[in-house]
Length: 469
Ligand SMILES: CC(C)[C@H](C(=O)O)[C@@H](O)C(=O)O
Ligand code: SF4
Image (cartoon, rainbow, N blue to C red; front, side, top):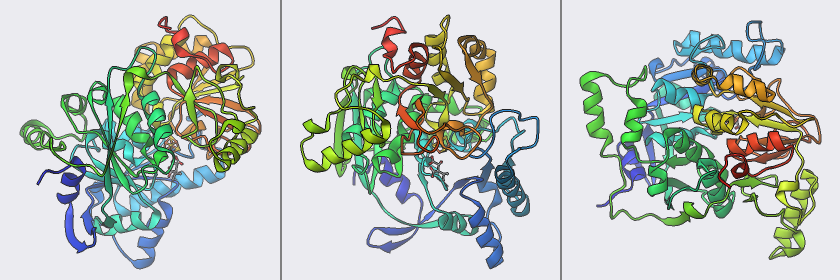
């Protein structure tokens, strides 16, 4: 019978079929970070359990870490305790730990793929809702809770209900000045924040094939913002070229054998999905969020919605609530929104390609007066590469701060946070109330738009800055 990629990944990991769509699944790999893992390790200790296969796990400090003064001990006592606890847990249970001074350090979802810990055909989990990022390689990857983390540590298995399938077909060529972030913001806007609940998304079509691995990771990363725990892209030559030679990728004859297997990881031509949508990339305009949910997005050329024009009272109330928090009035042009902060980074857009396009916008330009701008590479590898290309100099000359890798301003769990009322142009993935600091306001966008907005001092169309308007 014809199978989807998701079906194939699922069936190849079933240890026991318990009926009614529920199976015990074998979990190949797990990533751990300092915020969501402490309870899982505490659980193991309480029960006197050991880790079944320590080599299947990789621990990275990323969420609470400071992004400057990294040559000194972490100043914040809580953050220091979290990072030290992760290291102690990793040591006790024999797990590889990537600490702050490790050249591999970065955000879990950036580091895992870079190391080749993420590979096609694997099941990969992490106590983190953006784990679908790794699905860009054709891995069945999803976020889990602390209790599930503990199960995976102890047994390498998880009891899971099989999801339904949703294919997002992206056809046409992306126009200049748009990128993967615009595709996924448009997809989330179209599906709504609950539109993909219970579904595993496969991103397919020529526009997805044309994306780099960085772009595919940006797509899969935000699957959860449409409610889906899993995002997938079938692996292809782009994937294999990107992975070849990575520290944990197979080598020599093992690589060739792996390739033979990986090439089978595609949805069969006649596979049937529970749901399908099609997006025409050729018609995409750079996207920006105006509200407090990632599905509240619009074209940069558009306006903030007016609650008075909403189709029903419920929608009007939602818009009104978002606008009140965001300090915006319905009907205003998105390009008239003044910003005071810019953040380029996160597991959505903290990769080399993101820094390259932002630097292209910033070259020879300056951040507007009164705007404070931060660029935080997603990992040390990204930072080193950017420095080798001279991108750090472009950012610095433009007036950006050049920081050390971590989650940073994506989430107010570390030293980087915004004051109440501050408004930020951000390349991250969530614009929830308080996400970047209590009372702070977030506008989600791609890295080119964030750079353009830094220069303009208001939300700006990147096409005006790339010479391609
Ligand atoms: C802290 C962590 C568990 C959380 C997540 O689950 O995603 C964070 O990474 C986020 O992006 O909100
Ligand atoms: S960068 Fe943001 S979204 Fe990604 S793992 Fe960190 S906090 Fe979560």
